[in-house]
Figure 1 (tube, rainbow, N blue to C red):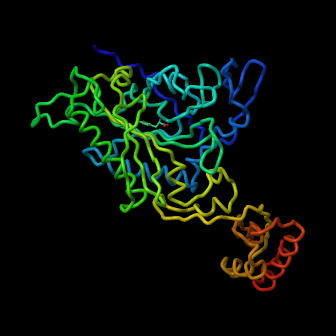
Figure 2 (spheres, rainbow, N blue to C red):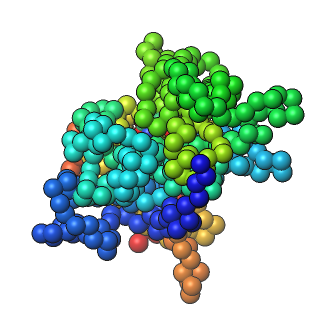
Figure 3 (cartoon, protein in one colour):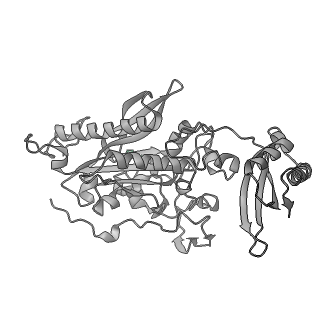
Length: 430
Ligand code: DAH
Protein backbone atom coordinates (compact mmCIF):
# COMPACT_ATOMS: atom_id res chain seq x y z
CA UNK A 1 0.00 0.00 0.00
CA UNK A 2 1.42 3.39 -0.91
CA UNK A 3 0.24 6.42 0.91
CA UNK A 4 0.77 9.94 -0.24
CA UNK A 5 2.44 12.32 2.12
CA UNK A 6 0.07 14.85 3.51
CA UNK A 7 0.56 18.28 2.02
CA UNK A 8 2.60 20.85 3.88
CA UNK A 9 -0.47 22.78 4.90
CA UNK A 10 -0.67 20.35 7.81
CA UNK A 11 2.65 21.61 9.03
CA UNK A 12 2.41 22.77 12.60
CA UNK A 13 2.23 26.51 13.01
CA UNK A 14 4.71 27.87 15.51
CA UNK A 15 3.10 30.60 17.53
CA UNK A 16 5.61 33.39 16.98
CA UNK A 17 4.35 35.72 19.65
CA UNK A 18 4.02 33.13 22.36
CA UNK A 19 7.26 33.88 24.13
CA UNK A 20 6.65 37.56 24.60
CA UNK A 21 2.94 37.71 25.48
CA UNK A 22 1.60 37.54 29.01
CA UNK A 23 -2.05 36.61 29.58
CA UNK A 24 -4.16 35.91 26.53
CA UNK A 25 -7.28 37.93 25.76
CA UNK A 26 -10.11 35.67 26.84
CA UNK A 27 -13.82 36.30 26.60
CA UNK A 28 -16.65 33.93 27.42
CA UNK A 29 -19.84 34.77 25.53
CA UNK A 30 -23.12 32.83 25.66
CA UNK A 31 -22.17 30.77 22.62
CA UNK A 32 -18.38 31.06 22.25
CA UNK A 33 -15.05 31.13 24.02
CA UNK A 34 -12.82 33.76 22.39
CA UNK A 35 -9.09 33.44 22.85
CA UNK A 36 -6.84 36.08 21.32
CA UNK A 37 -9.39 36.68 18.57
CA UNK A 38 -10.06 33.01 17.83
CA UNK A 39 -13.67 31.96 18.44
CA UNK A 40 -14.52 28.47 19.67
CA UNK A 41 -18.21 27.53 19.65
CA UNK A 42 -19.31 26.24 23.03
CA UNK A 43 -20.97 22.84 23.23
CA UNK A 44 -21.57 20.21 25.85
CA UNK A 45 -17.86 19.36 25.90
CA UNK A 46 -16.73 22.88 26.82
CA UNK A 47 -15.14 22.71 30.26
CA UNK A 48 -12.34 25.29 30.10
CA UNK A 49 -12.59 28.19 32.54
CA UNK A 50 -10.93 31.61 32.70
CA UNK A 51 -8.67 30.35 35.44
CA UNK A 52 -6.97 27.69 33.35
CA UNK A 53 -6.83 29.85 30.21
CA UNK A 54 -4.74 32.46 31.97
CA UNK A 55 -1.82 30.02 31.93
CA UNK A 56 -1.77 30.05 28.11
CA UNK A 57 1.15 32.17 26.89
CA UNK A 58 3.02 32.02 30.20
CA UNK A 59 5.61 29.80 28.50
CA UNK A 60 7.78 29.19 31.53
CA UNK A 61 9.99 26.95 29.41
CA UNK A 62 10.95 29.98 27.30
CA UNK A 63 11.51 32.42 30.13
CA UNK A 64 15.26 33.14 30.40
CA UNK A 65 16.71 32.00 33.71
CA UNK A 66 13.62 30.01 34.69
CA UNK A 67 14.49 26.50 35.92
CA UNK A 68 12.23 24.94 33.25
CA UNK A 69 13.97 27.00 30.59
CA UNK A 70 17.39 25.88 31.87
CA UNK A 71 16.23 22.27 31.72
CA UNK A 72 14.83 22.75 28.21
CA UNK A 73 18.18 24.16 27.08
CA UNK A 74 20.04 21.33 28.78
CA UNK A 75 17.95 18.62 27.08
CA UNK A 76 18.25 20.33 23.70
CA UNK A 77 22.00 20.67 23.99
CA UNK A 78 22.20 16.96 24.86
CA UNK A 79 20.12 16.00 21.80
CA UNK A 80 22.12 18.31 19.52
CA UNK A 81 25.44 16.91 20.73
CA UNK A 82 24.35 13.28 20.70
CA UNK A 83 22.98 13.22 17.16
CA UNK A 84 25.21 15.07 14.69
CA UNK A 85 25.02 14.54 10.93
CA UNK A 86 28.06 13.96 8.69
CA UNK A 87 28.90 17.66 8.76
CA UNK A 88 28.67 17.79 12.55
CA UNK A 89 25.36 19.68 12.60
CA UNK A 90 22.48 18.52 14.80
CA UNK A 91 19.89 16.33 13.08
CA UNK A 92 17.13 17.10 15.60
CA UNK A 93 14.76 20.02 15.00
CA UNK A 94 13.24 21.67 18.02
CA UNK A 95 9.65 22.94 18.27
CA UNK A 96 9.04 24.78 21.51
CA UNK A 97 6.44 27.33 20.47
CA UNK A 98 3.67 25.18 19.01
CA UNK A 99 0.23 26.39 19.96
CA UNK A 100 -1.13 24.35 22.92
CA UNK A 101 -4.66 24.59 21.51
CA UNK A 102 -4.89 21.47 19.35
CA UNK A 103 -7.65 19.41 17.78
CA UNK A 104 -8.99 16.34 19.53
CA UNK A 105 -7.82 14.54 16.39
CA UNK A 106 -4.23 15.57 17.10
CA UNK A 107 -4.45 14.85 20.80
CA UNK A 108 -6.13 11.43 20.53
CA UNK A 109 -7.06 10.03 17.09
CA UNK A 110 -3.67 10.65 15.45
CA UNK A 111 -2.13 8.58 18.27
CA UNK A 112 -4.62 5.72 17.93
CA UNK A 113 -6.10 6.44 21.35
CA UNK A 114 -9.39 4.50 21.43
CA UNK A 115 -12.74 6.34 21.69
CA UNK A 116 -13.42 4.93 25.15
CA UNK A 117 -9.95 5.58 26.56
CA UNK A 118 -10.09 7.22 30.03
CA UNK A 119 -7.68 9.97 28.94
CA UNK A 120 -10.46 11.40 26.72
CA UNK A 121 -12.92 12.04 29.53
CA UNK A 122 -14.12 15.48 30.56
CA UNK A 123 -12.79 14.87 34.02
CA UNK A 124 -9.25 14.45 32.64
CA UNK A 125 -8.94 17.18 30.01
CA UNK A 126 -9.74 20.79 29.24
CA UNK A 127 -11.99 20.90 26.18
CA UNK A 128 -12.79 24.10 24.28
CA UNK A 129 -15.47 22.10 22.49
CA UNK A 130 -15.78 18.63 21.03
CA UNK A 131 -13.13 19.37 18.38
CA UNK A 132 -10.57 21.47 20.26
CA UNK A 133 -8.66 20.86 23.45
CA UNK A 134 -5.77 22.25 25.47
CA UNK A 135 -3.20 19.57 24.61
CA UNK A 136 -2.86 16.90 27.27
CA UNK A 137 0.59 15.88 26.05
CA UNK A 138 3.20 16.99 23.55
CA UNK A 139 2.61 13.71 21.67
CA UNK A 140 -0.30 15.59 19.99
CA UNK A 141 2.19 17.02 17.49
CA UNK A 142 3.88 13.75 16.52
CA UNK A 143 1.81 12.84 13.52
CA UNK A 144 1.70 16.28 11.88
CA UNK A 145 5.45 16.78 12.24
CA UNK A 146 6.16 13.32 10.85
CA UNK A 147 3.71 14.01 8.00
CA UNK A 148 5.55 17.23 7.23
CA UNK A 149 8.67 15.22 6.45
CA UNK A 150 10.68 15.41 9.67
CA UNK A 151 12.66 12.41 10.88
CA UNK A 152 14.14 13.67 14.14
CA UNK A 153 12.51 16.26 16.33
CA UNK A 154 11.87 17.40 19.86
CA UNK A 155 8.68 19.16 20.93
CA UNK A 156 8.59 21.07 24.21
CA UNK A 157 5.70 22.94 25.72
CA UNK A 158 2.96 23.35 28.27
CA UNK A 159 0.32 20.62 28.65
CA UNK A 160 -2.98 20.73 30.50
CA UNK A 161 -4.64 18.03 32.60
CA UNK A 162 -7.42 18.09 35.12
CA UNK A 163 -5.86 16.36 38.06
CA UNK A 164 -5.49 16.35 41.79
CA UNK A 165 -3.67 19.36 43.24
CA UNK A 166 -0.81 18.77 45.65
CA UNK A 167 2.90 19.49 45.93
CA UNK A 168 3.65 17.48 42.78
CA UNK A 169 0.51 18.00 40.67
CA UNK A 170 -0.62 21.15 38.93
CA UNK A 171 -3.17 21.39 36.08
CA UNK A 172 -0.51 22.81 33.76
CA UNK A 173 2.94 21.33 33.40
CA UNK A 174 5.59 20.98 30.71
CA UNK A 175 6.72 18.06 28.59
CA UNK A 176 9.47 17.21 26.15
CA UNK A 177 8.75 14.80 23.34
CA UNK A 178 11.38 13.15 21.17
CA UNK A 179 10.86 11.30 17.89
CA UNK A 180 13.47 9.61 15.72
CA UNK A 181 12.71 7.77 12.48
CA UNK A 182 14.98 5.43 10.55
CA UNK A 183 15.03 4.31 6.94
CA UNK A 184 16.30 0.77 6.35
CA UNK A 185 19.93 1.75 5.70
CA UNK A 186 20.00 3.91 8.86
CA UNK A 187 19.01 1.07 11.16
CA UNK A 188 20.55 -1.94 9.47
CA UNK A 189 23.95 -2.41 7.94
CA UNK A 190 22.56 -3.37 4.54
CA UNK A 191 25.97 -4.30 3.13
CA UNK A 192 26.61 -6.88 5.83
CA UNK A 193 23.16 -8.01 6.92
CA UNK A 194 20.49 -9.42 4.65
CA UNK A 195 17.66 -8.01 6.66
CA UNK A 196 14.37 -6.24 6.13
CA UNK A 197 12.69 -3.57 8.23
CA UNK A 198 9.31 -5.18 7.76
CA UNK A 199 7.64 -8.55 7.71
CA UNK A 200 4.09 -9.79 7.72
CA UNK A 201 4.32 -11.49 11.08
CA UNK A 202 2.71 -11.71 14.46
CA UNK A 203 2.51 -9.17 17.25
CA UNK A 204 4.33 -10.47 20.33
CA UNK A 205 5.13 -8.75 23.64
CA UNK A 206 8.47 -7.87 22.06
CA UNK A 207 7.49 -6.57 18.62
CA UNK A 208 4.77 -5.33 16.28
CA UNK A 209 3.37 -7.58 13.54
CA UNK A 210 4.94 -5.34 10.86
CA UNK A 211 8.48 -5.35 12.26
CA UNK A 212 11.15 -8.00 11.98
CA UNK A 213 12.65 -9.18 15.25
CA UNK A 214 15.92 -7.39 14.45
CA UNK A 215 14.16 -4.11 13.59
CA UNK A 216 12.37 -4.11 16.91
CA UNK A 217 15.55 -5.10 18.79
CA UNK A 218 17.61 -2.34 17.25
CA UNK A 219 14.97 0.33 17.77
CA UNK A 220 14.64 -0.60 21.43
CA UNK A 221 18.39 -0.60 21.81
CA UNK A 222 18.79 2.84 20.18
CA UNK A 223 15.96 4.26 22.27
CA UNK A 224 17.18 2.91 25.58
CA UNK A 225 20.76 3.97 24.91
CA UNK A 226 19.69 7.54 24.10
CA UNK A 227 17.49 7.88 27.17
CA UNK A 228 19.91 6.27 29.60
CA UNK A 229 22.57 8.71 28.39
CA UNK A 230 20.16 11.63 28.75
CA UNK A 231 19.37 10.69 32.34
CA UNK A 232 23.07 10.34 33.14
CA UNK A 233 23.72 13.68 31.47
CA UNK A 234 21.08 15.32 33.67
CA UNK A 235 21.63 13.55 36.99
CA UNK A 236 25.20 12.27 36.78
CA UNK A 237 26.56 8.81 36.09
CA UNK A 238 25.90 7.48 39.57
CA UNK A 239 22.13 7.64 39.38
CA UNK A 240 20.45 4.21 39.44
CA UNK A 241 17.97 3.49 36.63
CA UNK A 242 15.65 0.66 35.66
CA UNK A 243 13.29 -0.12 32.77
CA UNK A 244 9.75 -1.35 33.23
CA UNK A 245 7.33 -2.50 30.54
CA UNK A 246 4.07 -0.65 30.14
CA UNK A 247 1.31 0.13 27.65
CA UNK A 248 0.67 3.19 25.49
CA UNK A 249 -1.76 3.14 22.54
CA UNK A 250 0.86 4.81 20.34
CA UNK A 251 3.89 2.58 20.96
CA UNK A 252 4.69 -1.12 21.11
CA UNK A 253 6.58 -2.33 22.93
CA UNK A 254 6.35 0.48 25.49
CA UNK A 255 8.57 1.24 28.47
CA UNK A 256 9.01 3.52 31.40
CA UNK A 257 12.36 4.61 32.72
CA UNK A 258 12.60 4.89 36.48
CA UNK A 259 15.28 6.59 38.52
CA UNK A 260 16.10 6.01 42.17
CA UNK A 261 15.77 9.01 44.46
CA UNK A 262 16.07 8.82 48.22
CA UNK A 263 15.51 5.06 48.08
CA UNK A 264 12.34 5.32 46.02
CA UNK A 265 11.85 4.53 42.33
CA UNK A 266 10.50 7.52 40.44
CA UNK A 267 8.93 7.13 37.02
CA UNK A 268 10.66 9.64 34.77
CA UNK A 269 9.47 9.08 31.24
CA UNK A 270 7.42 6.95 28.85
CA UNK A 271 8.68 5.70 25.51
CA UNK A 272 8.54 2.96 22.93
CA UNK A 273 8.60 1.84 19.33
CA UNK A 274 6.13 4.00 17.36
CA UNK A 275 3.05 2.10 16.22
CA UNK A 276 3.61 1.56 12.50
CA UNK A 277 0.01 2.59 11.80
CA UNK A 278 0.87 6.14 12.92
CA UNK A 279 3.64 6.28 10.34
CA UNK A 280 1.34 4.85 7.65
CA UNK A 281 -1.27 7.47 8.50
CA UNK A 282 1.39 10.18 8.30
CA UNK A 283 2.35 9.02 4.82
CA UNK A 284 5.65 7.44 5.84
CA UNK A 285 5.28 3.72 5.13
CA UNK A 286 8.99 3.06 4.60
CA UNK A 287 10.44 4.09 7.97
CA UNK A 288 10.31 2.90 11.56
CA UNK A 289 10.94 4.85 14.72
CA UNK A 290 11.02 5.44 18.42
CA UNK A 291 9.48 8.14 20.61
CA UNK A 292 9.61 9.32 24.18
CA UNK A 293 7.82 11.82 26.41
CA UNK A 294 8.98 13.23 29.71
CA UNK A 295 7.73 15.73 32.26
CA UNK A 296 10.01 18.71 32.85
CA UNK A 297 8.76 19.68 36.33
CA UNK A 298 9.33 16.20 37.67
CA UNK A 299 12.96 16.33 36.58
CA UNK A 300 13.54 19.96 37.57
CA UNK A 301 12.13 19.33 41.06
CA UNK A 302 14.78 16.62 41.61
CA UNK A 303 17.61 18.45 39.86
CA UNK A 304 17.18 21.69 41.79
CA UNK A 305 15.52 20.27 44.92
CA UNK A 306 12.39 22.38 44.39
CA UNK A 307 9.87 21.05 46.94
CA UNK A 308 6.57 22.30 45.50
CA UNK A 309 5.38 22.40 41.87
CA UNK A 310 3.59 25.74 42.43
CA UNK A 311 6.95 27.45 42.88
CA UNK A 312 7.56 27.22 39.11
CA UNK A 313 4.70 29.70 38.60
CA UNK A 314 6.02 32.12 41.17
CA UNK A 315 6.91 35.64 40.13
CA UNK A 316 8.63 36.05 43.47
CA UNK A 317 12.16 37.25 42.87
CA UNK A 318 13.29 35.21 45.89
CA UNK A 319 12.60 32.14 43.73
CA UNK A 320 13.54 33.42 40.28
CA UNK A 321 16.79 35.13 41.26
CA UNK A 322 18.26 31.81 42.38
CA UNK A 323 18.33 30.68 38.75
CA UNK A 324 19.04 33.96 36.93
CA UNK A 325 22.24 33.92 34.93
CA UNK A 326 22.79 30.19 35.48
CA UNK A 327 24.07 27.95 32.70
CA UNK A 328 21.88 24.96 31.68
CA UNK A 329 23.96 22.27 33.35
CA UNK A 330 24.98 24.27 36.40
CA UNK A 331 24.33 22.56 39.71
CA UNK A 332 21.90 24.71 41.67
CA UNK A 333 20.22 23.76 44.91
CA UNK A 334 17.12 25.79 45.61
CA UNK A 335 17.00 27.37 49.07
CA UNK A 336 13.52 27.87 50.36
CA UNK A 337 12.39 31.43 50.82
CA UNK A 338 10.02 32.55 53.54
CA UNK A 339 6.33 32.23 52.77
CA UNK A 340 5.74 35.75 54.09
CA UNK A 341 5.34 38.43 51.43
CA UNK A 342 8.12 40.57 50.06
CA UNK A 343 8.05 44.32 50.42
CA UNK A 344 10.27 46.49 48.28
CA UNK A 345 11.52 50.08 48.33
CA UNK A 346 13.83 51.88 45.94
CA UNK A 347 16.64 54.28 46.69
CA UNK A 348 17.95 56.66 43.99
CA UNK A 349 20.94 58.95 44.21
CA UNK A 350 23.50 60.97 42.26
CA UNK A 351 26.96 59.48 42.45
CA UNK A 352 29.85 61.56 43.79
CA UNK A 353 32.78 62.31 41.51
CA UNK A 354 34.81 59.19 41.04
CA UNK A 355 31.70 57.00 41.43
CA UNK A 356 31.05 54.35 44.03
CA UNK A 357 31.44 50.65 44.33
CA UNK A 358 28.16 48.68 44.30
CA UNK A 359 29.53 46.24 46.81
CA UNK A 360 29.77 49.12 49.31
CA UNK A 361 26.06 49.73 48.80
CA UNK A 362 25.30 46.06 49.53
CA UNK A 363 27.50 46.16 52.60
CA UNK A 364 25.76 49.22 54.05
CA UNK A 365 22.26 47.92 53.26
CA UNK A 366 23.07 44.62 54.94
CA UNK A 367 24.69 46.38 57.89
CA UNK A 368 21.70 48.60 58.60
CA UNK A 369 18.84 46.35 57.42
CA UNK A 370 20.14 43.06 58.75
CA UNK A 371 18.29 39.80 58.08
CA UNK A 372 15.11 41.36 56.76
CA UNK A 373 16.94 42.37 53.57
CA UNK A 374 16.46 39.56 51.07
CA UNK A 375 17.93 41.15 47.95
CA UNK A 376 19.48 44.33 46.64
CA UNK A 377 19.50 44.97 42.92
CA UNK A 378 20.69 47.83 40.72
CA UNK A 379 17.53 48.49 38.69
CA UNK A 380 18.33 51.73 36.86
CA UNK A 381 21.29 53.88 35.90
CA UNK A 382 21.57 56.98 33.73
CA UNK A 383 23.79 59.91 32.85
CA UNK A 384 22.30 63.41 33.03
CA UNK A 385 22.89 64.94 29.58
CA UNK A 386 23.64 68.46 30.90
CA UNK A 387 25.27 68.05 34.30
CA UNK A 388 27.02 64.80 33.26
CA UNK A 389 26.16 63.45 36.68
CA UNK A 390 25.42 59.76 36.97
CA UNK A 391 22.37 58.48 38.83
CA UNK A 392 21.70 55.00 40.16
CA UNK A 393 18.60 53.37 41.59
CA UNK A 394 18.79 50.30 43.81
CA UNK A 395 15.78 48.18 44.74
CA UNK A 396 15.90 46.73 48.23
CA UNK A 397 13.64 43.74 48.81
CA UNK A 398 12.68 43.11 52.40
CA UNK A 399 11.15 39.96 53.82
CA UNK A 400 10.93 38.55 57.30
CA UNK A 401 11.35 34.80 57.78
CA UNK A 402 8.69 34.54 60.49
CA UNK A 403 6.09 37.24 59.97
CA UNK A 404 4.62 39.78 57.58
CA UNK A 405 6.46 43.09 57.66
CA UNK A 406 4.42 46.29 57.61
CA UNK A 407 5.31 49.01 55.13
CA UNK A 408 5.67 51.39 58.08
CA UNK A 409 8.39 49.41 59.81
CA UNK A 410 10.17 48.73 56.52
CA UNK A 411 9.93 52.46 55.77
CA UNK A 412 11.85 53.31 58.94
CA UNK A 413 14.67 50.88 58.14
CA UNK A 414 14.76 52.15 54.57
CA UNK A 415 15.16 55.75 55.74
CA UNK A 416 18.07 54.72 57.96
CA UNK A 417 19.72 52.93 55.05
CA UNK A 418 19.36 56.02 52.86
CA UNK A 419 20.94 58.25 55.49
CA UNK A 420 23.82 55.84 55.95
CA UNK A 421 24.46 55.64 52.19
CA UNK A 422 24.62 59.42 51.99
CA UNK A 423 26.93 59.67 54.98
CA UNK A 424 29.33 56.85 54.07
CA UNK A 425 29.47 57.05 50.26
CA UNK A 426 28.92 60.75 49.65
CA UNK A 427 25.97 60.10 47.33
CA UNK A 428 23.25 62.76 46.92
CA UNK A 429 19.81 61.30 47.53
CA UNK A 430 17.18 62.17 44.94
N1 DAH B 1 2.38 11.08 25.98
C1 DAH B 1 2.71 10.25 27.11
C2 DAH B 1 2.16 10.90 28.38
O1 DAH B 1 1.93 12.08 28.41
C3 DAH B 1 4.19 10.08 27.24
C4 DAH B 1 4.78 9.29 26.11
C5 DAH B 1 4.88 7.94 26.20
C6 DAH B 1 5.20 9.93 24.96
C7 DAH B 1 5.42 7.18 25.18
C8 DAH B 1 5.75 9.19 23.91
C9 DAH B 1 5.85 7.81 24.05
O2 DAH B 1 6.18 9.75 22.79
O3 DAH B 1 6.40 7.12 23.00
O4 DAH B 1 1.99 10.24 29.34
